[in-house]
Image 1 (tube, rainbow, N blue to C red):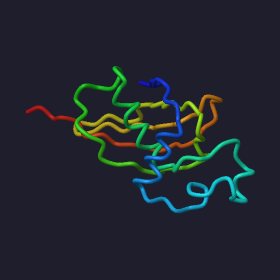
Image 2: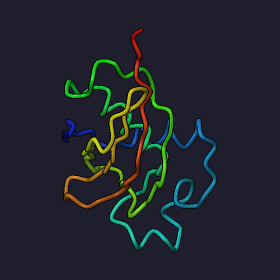
Image 3: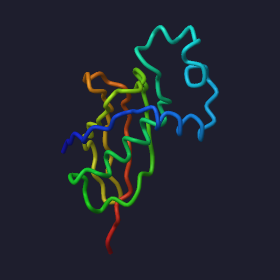
Image 4: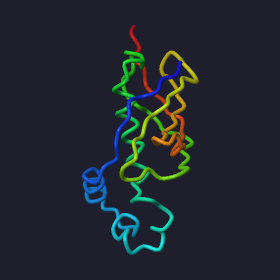
Length: 131
């Protein structure tokens, strides 16, 4: 089974909350305009961990996921390929790769609106095992 989520726009308001509450101090997040790294990007990058957080919500909002999922239990083999930028629309492609009695395992791929791969990883969900 595979599904593609709806899209979520990365905006300045979210960026401000994430970087302030997360206490990010890297110059890409605190002083982007004056960072020598800024020339690499068309707009300010988000912390990658936030994109994983959003992917969880995009997965949960899907009506395709099995109803017996209780919680996310692990993220494995996370690969950051490129950052999500302010103004990007991101979406999640999730592919079921293993189904067991107690859990599901998916491959997650997070893309931007240009269909560029930002992040890929494997996630495991705990199933509600009925006795």
